[in-house]
Amino acid sequence: MTGPSSDAERLEQLASAARQIRGAVARTVVGQEATIDAMLITLFARGHALLVGVPGLAKTLLVSSLAQALDLSFGRVQFTPDLLPADITGTDLLQEEVDEAGRTQRRMRFLPGPIFANLVLADEINRTPPKTQAALLQAMQERRVTVGSITHALPDPFQVFATRNPIEQEGTYQLPEAQLDRFLLEIHVGYPTEQEEREIARRTTSGASERVQPVLSIQQVRALGELIPRIPITDEAIHLAVRLARLSRPGEQGAPREVNEFLRFGAGPRGSQALVLAAKARAALRGEAAADLDDVREMLIPALRHRIVLGYRAEAEGVSELDLLQVIRKQAR
Image (cartoon, rainbow, N blue to C red; front, side):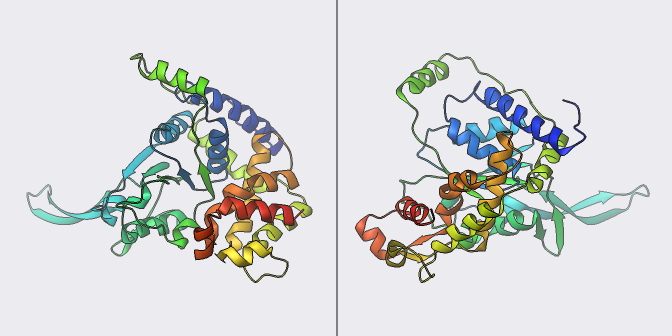
């Protein structure tokens, strides 16, 4: 693809590229169209995503396949209870070097960790203690890491896709709210249909393997990512995004009764920001020149589900974040 010269051409290229990326990923991953769309929204919005699903749903394959389709470097960190922050960010090593005069000198050299990649898979992020999880906080917010007294810039783009198993509790840790708030979207990966599962069984036992071919260069990915903030959004859509976030806060004027009864905390300002940015990315990937109310409504659940905190009564009565967000969506109409 040649480089577009205007935002209109970039928008057209992005919509075309999205169709090609879906086709390329389909060579290795069966189904999961909605998951792939949400991941593309996150990628081009320059955000981070939390993938939630039981084992065996191709979450790792999805992330690595997208990295290949977008010509991005890929790093994987398997989170375990004994993982240390330096295992993620890297560490300073003392090395001996011999100069031209034959003298031995000792120098500190930084050895980058696996976080120094364009797309980083934080596999089973809730299996490591909060101290190690915190190693991602600066990286996800500032796109850089500080080791010792030196700050190192991360590659551009830099994005984290973390996975979490929702059913296994043994040996896991809660993700701190500050960590969760840095994810643009929480994407739930569901089971395949029966037809898709038959195709999965056929492909994965045939011995053949497919490789995803790049659809975009990394330079094009950067340029298209810069387009998303420039996508227009209607004033009504911004008002809706802010209202949805505010209605999730217990004690807020107009908040639904269920929010006051079952939630401890609602979404902060990052929630409304995430709604607006995700809505813009959704519209752009569909080739639409502006984001509107429908885009905001569609992004409500993935953008706010991980930003609200249930109270004890909700857990006792089996009320979920999804139940409450659906109530909020009805209230905001």
